[in-house]
Amino acid sequence: MHTPTPEQTAAAEAFATGAHLVIQAGAGTGKTTTLAMLAHSARRQGRPGRYIAFNRAVARHAAREFPDEVACGTAHALAYTAVGRGYQARMNAPRQAGWRTGAALGIDDGMSVRIGARKVDNRALSYTVLRTVTRFCQSADSRIAPHHVPPLRGAESEPLHAQLAGLVLPYARTAWADLQHPDHGVVRFEHDHYLKMWALREPVIKADFLLLDEAQDTNPVVEQVFTAQRDHAQLVLVGDSAQAIYGWRGARDVMSGFDGRQLSLSRSFRFGPALAAEANRWLAIVGAPIRLTGSPRLETELHRVRAPDAILCRTNVGAMVEVIRQLEADRRVALAGGGEALSALARAAHDLEAGRRTAHPELMLFETWAELREYAEFDPAGRDLLPLVELVDEHGAQAVLQALDRLSPETSAEVTVSTAHRAKGREWASVRIADDFTAPDDLDERSEDGSPVPGPVDIDEARLAYVAVTRARSLLDIGGLSWINNHPAGDPRHEHGRPGAGGGRERLKGRSERPQA
Ligand SMILES: Nc1ncnc2c1ncn2[C@@H]1O[C@H](COP(=O)(O)OP(=O)(O)OP(=O)(O)O)[C@@H](O)[C@H]1O
Image (tube, rainbow, N blue to C red):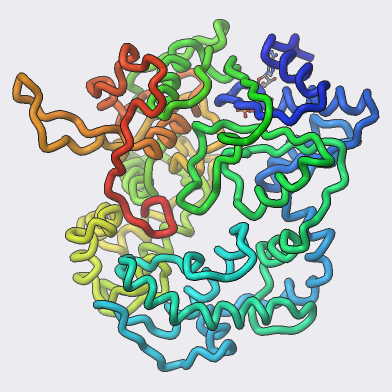
């Protein structure tokens, strides 16, 4: 058992008062250890509680540290017991193509509607209907509405979206009505469906206290249920606001703005002071409420590394570029999370190259590769697809697919390539940041000496950079993030407690549902 740090002791003492708490826990600061301390003290007081995790793996990991009196699980598990169980018969239905479900909902097989320059066919419409229902299920809303209809690549503008919503909503409402039958229906019953049904029943979770983990990325539907318990249960929100990287998916940082006592864990047990200083540069840019202290016993170095254990990329396509490079250098390479998402994109690119339409949700409104290339090159919303277009133009979709076939499992790989999103919650001894973490564009201004003025750092990009740099234990090569050394926001003298010192100008990026291809 460790000797608790003063911050861990403060968290335990604050918990004992019964007050609602927000615990900002920086990267590697012993969050699970601290929560387990709270849970053990509650057991001694005979207080039953519940720990709610983001996914089952995290819940299982926590359960090993927690006393039996604290039930560990996900919000979905609670919803399953209360509601989902009754839909068991529908949940085992075989998967079927979205267009078949669409057909069963009344979407005509040969339909094709023009929205702006794009043709929406029955496949695209069916996909959009099902996504609309899912987005509604993840929201805190009580009815399906136009904003639940996902923006489609190539038809993002407001009037085109309104037109699309008009087309989609009647089918989405039919789909939701279909899902209410416990034992028969045409739409495949998914976990998010019973979660929403549970939330709409305004459930009361029986517990003296509730611990919500990864609270910086909470779906509105879970937030709604959780915060509704505040009158009968002590609520403890734990997470790291600076690691909120799922806003693009509709998640919210419920820690900022929550009415509770604010505490922090800032001593990192993962890395030493030099890396803590690098992390703090990004924490300053995002205006985070905490700064990290490294462990004096750990010496983490920051310099170039030729053969790191992990290479962290900003985008899926950036990860693909790294996989190809590592294979060319004859290294056994793994891709965190597997290659399926990239294979699907490469197959879609292959279809378009061959002049066929694709069912891939990112590319389904484009009829030819040339059309997609034009969108990526000239439409600001499509700019983040440009690396994909360039990758396929340079190597060909077939070569990309062949490279993905040569991936090794992580256990036998010499290097793991990951996106920063996938790397969240993980750590490696040595890490290199890939070169797709590019600097913000320069402004159209010149400084006194005539040099271009760098644009402000986008806050979302800075959060992702913070997640990426804090994955290393012994060695970090900041690689693609080196530009920060010459950017005014990276200068520690610029901090002075200014929240969001990176500025607020949004960099142009796609408004699709994925962060970036
Ligand atoms: N007071 C302490 N003194 C020394 N080591 C500690 C202390 N508290 C936690 N640790 C160590 O810090 C490491 C990370 O802790 P833990 O596993 O609880 O964090 P986590 O929740 O998994 O990770 P993170 O903090 O990144 O979210 C563990 O090796 C743990 O033993």
